[in-house]
Image (cartoon, rainbow, N blue to C red):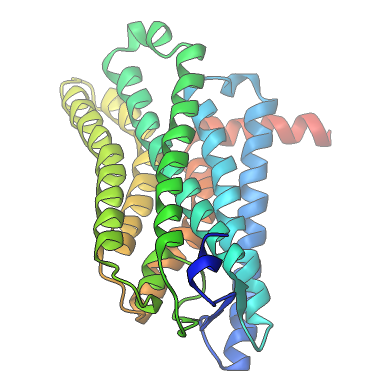
Amino acid sequence: MAWSNHSAITEFILTGLSDDPLIEALLFALFLGIYVLTMTGNLMLLLVIRADSHLHTPMYFFLSNLSFLDLCFSSVTVPKLLKDLLSVKKRISVEGCLAQVFFVFFSSGTEACLLSVMAYDRYAAICHPLLYGQVMRNELCVRLVLVSWGLASLNATIIVLLAVSLDFCEAQTIHHYTCELPALFPLSCSDISIATDVLLCSSLLHGLGTFIPIFFSYARIGSTVLSISSTTGRSKAFSTCSSHLAAVTLFFGSGFLCYLMPPSGSSLDLLLSLQYSTVTPVLNPLIYSLKNKEVKAAVRRTLRKYLL
């Protein structure tokens, strides 16, 4: 472990969300419920998409990958949070901290790429419906998913190398409920200016690199939808994008604020992080099931198939 060469720190102490036992008990019940809903909702969506042949399309192939990522994203932070809410000392090892930093950036980075790919899929479906089958071939869909995982893995590796390069002398208390790189910077006794700049550039490049294609895809989609003469046609075209737009707003809204604002250890930092890593994964399956007629119909068919 590179840290052990220049740091005597072997573990960190997390301040968590509260030090009041009653509040911690209430938060434990709340986040346990959120975690169970996250697992149930995303696993159900994965099962329905796999079981129903009507959903074997590029859009739902990407959505199934998004659900799998939400399972991973939530599992990186919530189980440790639940354990800490029942613990007096909220400790995490250096290795565990590094693993959390990597997997948070890996899962969130892959999700950002997938949301961008899904926006392109909606652009191809609405703006070029006659060529959609030729453009969004199965081979291209698989490649786009693999590229998303690869780019996020590269970005997460760079971030972890930044964490490894930091020197920690005496301070062990992380003013957060999880290991996030911005929360580690105040504990470092070495110069963090380069690490801060690299993290900012990496977040901007990855964030804007995935958000800009979404923006241009929806600009073209909006232009195409407005050119449709019938109100029914416009409504149908917009309904195919509304779920994705809601997911993009939730994810990028809290994500940009979380990583582009300077860390302060304030309640706002914790709330943004909780929404980014805990609330969004539970809302995505609800958004795509409640607002999507095809998914609701597939759920009914799947229930009839397995229960009747």
